Length: 181
Image 1: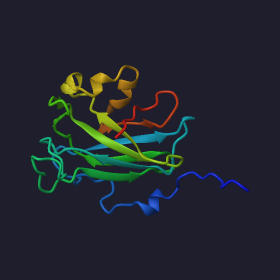
Image 2: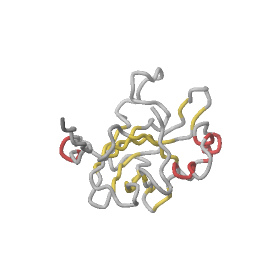
Image 3: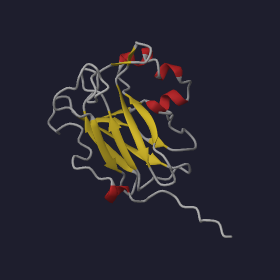
Image 4: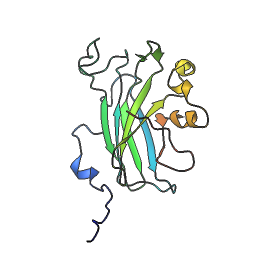
């Protein structure tokens, strides 16, 4: 009896999972809007040209557009974006700074943006967080402070002229910290 050949997942993201609003979590002219951009790299340090990056975040006042948030959603704020990577592994979302949200232990978490990455060779998504480098509450964040260096630094974006940069390394040297959700 022959074995079933193995297969990887994708590349199908660009045409199968596109979303009408794409990378726009907020309108381009929204007050405080900025670009969060980065690249996705594989374990060999090569760009991943067929990945999909989804962002999910709280509104500036810390509320989620989700039925599990008892505080209720902010009208008109969905907090979700989706961007396929290009040939160089680049992705981007246009967003605003999220507010602080309550953590499982009741302490406030620092503003952060959750990212899910879907890519070839992954049977399930990987999930990470982006913290902003100029946020004073990062030092008190229960999740970020629980991660030892050098992993912690893989969760903090870099400041750019028009927002922030955040590269995602799926494996290898400086692998991004991923969370089990």
